[in-house]
Length: 276
Image (cartoon, rainbow, N blue to C red):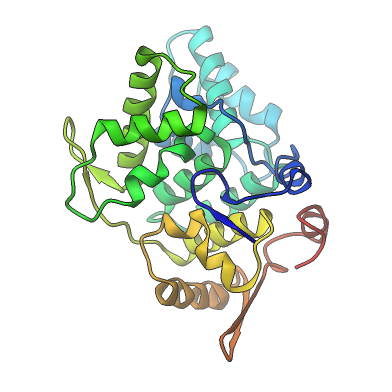
């Protein structure tokens, strides 16, 4: 299996992309994304999930945002566009595997929430995903150059955006990576290292698993690289996740086995490439 950190974590076959992009799984591919107009909207997501019940449907989330105005938006039009953008980034539907798992992990991990949000939006917004190499190649303390973001976006999108749109995507993406903790500063953004939690590592592994990765390869995907931790550190955190009950993990003789029978339903495991 070939590693492709810019797009998906892997060079997927068309059949694998079709499975991962199934509306019940939740990945998005292609060259379009919400970062033309928004960031990862971390504060809005946090407020929404505080107000939402664990079993809310897509219609329930829409009602909270549009009718109940739980996010305090001034006009009906703003509420509707907020609902649309948040659903693009996060699905907001308990029937979507990635959102259901995000929701479950979110409830028990205050500290990991910025990284959980970033991982989800990397799965659903190709534009943000295209910028990941520009951030991940930096060492802590190094300054992010605008041109590196622009170049990464042009490579991913085939240079189809004009300068004004590119500038907006760059600003929004830089803000998103700041909200996740990977960057700091206002006008000048510098790299900082993030600290994942067991729940965050679990979600990164689920994302890789949903794309077809298995075993030790799960610790080499884009989702794992984003966590700024070595394979040994990720394995240690995965062992903690096992103790909490998020996943099953076996490490023996250099062979790593990871499964999610306690986190994913049997139907979800069948949907995601059939077996664990």
